[in-house]
Length: 139
Image 1 (cartoon, rainbow, N blue to C red):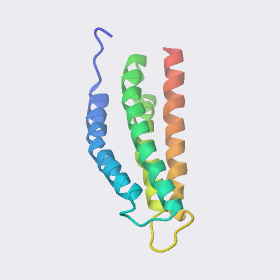
Image 2: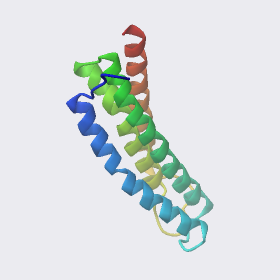
Image 3: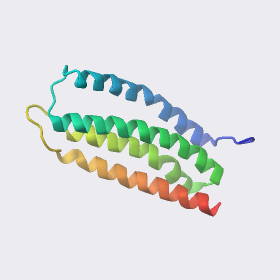
Image 4: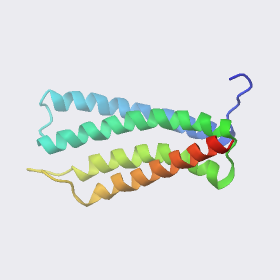
């Protein structure tokens, strides 16, 4: 990709997203504590913790890729911002939804009201990838 230069917007977002990897690393360490039984959780909470951690890592990686593709497609304005922000925002929202909706003391066996963050993150993911996909096809 000779001559590819990231826009300032993509560069700033990429830098910010890369800094979140430290939080994902902490989440990985915390997962080892859960698996070893050092953090008491219900099976439901363990499953949601795994889901939150996995979505964070996968969507942050996809989010970095979408920044490069957005710039290659030449998307600008509102469409460029939706394509750039959709996937990274979904990483934060979906992961937060899994983590926060399973918080609580005692026998937590079902998500609380904060599960709506997962659905909001899914909308953000869909908006970002559909906008970028159409932008790439139209470029």
